Amino acid sequence: MNKSLRHAVIAGNWKMNKTPDEAKSLVEQIKPYADKADCTVVACVPYVDLAVALEAAKGSKLSIGAQNCHFEAKGAFTGEISAPMLKEMGVEYVIIGHSERRTYFGETDVTVNKRTLAALENGLKVILCVGEYLEQREQGITSELVAMQTKIALLNVTKAQLENVIIAYEPVWAIGTGKTATADQAEEVCKIIRDTIEKLYDKAAADSITIQYGGSMNAKNADELLGKENVDGGLIGGASLIADDFATIINAASK
Ligand code: 13P
Image (tube, rainbow, N blue to C red; front, side, top):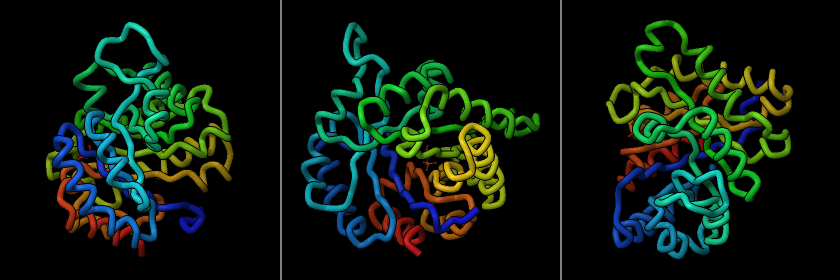
């Protein structure tokens, strides 16, 4: 394995935070850091903030993402947003399968796969989230579970399409809890995901795919987590809403 083959990606998942005016202001604050960074920087914002975030990020290196997309292109799906809608706006990334979608909105491995395929077929880059609940870790089934989530999510995704996929390992017990996985725990599971990619595709695909850690990553712990061989970036919730903290994480990934 060779970390230098891979590109570091730091993505903020703003979740259900920031009105359009607030989003404009935060994008303005983050932009200069993205421009200086030696890694890709993405802000995944609420749907209603996309237009203003895209406009504010114009001319900078900051990429804009959404936090979900539906698997159908159009139709009777009240409240949903499709991949072609995002693409036409100029959105570049979309988070798929976040544990909050799985836990609160009935997302399953099968719908995660369908959404992943729809996003890729429409030219979006996917940040695909996998991760275990605390009970599952305590039962000792983390590796099987994360491998299974990865396999099902990537069913029928071609090797060429995989180039537009980032996988985010987000242990559910570490999200928004302040309980970060240790760097060794993050490394262990990111390696399991990489090995799963090698089995599904090949070594070249496994060596080149970007795998992020997410779950209470912050300005203090980013250095250690991002220093691990198989941790190529971060998906950051709370700390992505504070420009200075996000900047520190971007700097840690740029080393
Ligand atoms: P926190 O960084 O707030 O724990 O959230 C992580 C996350 O869920 C990112 O998608």
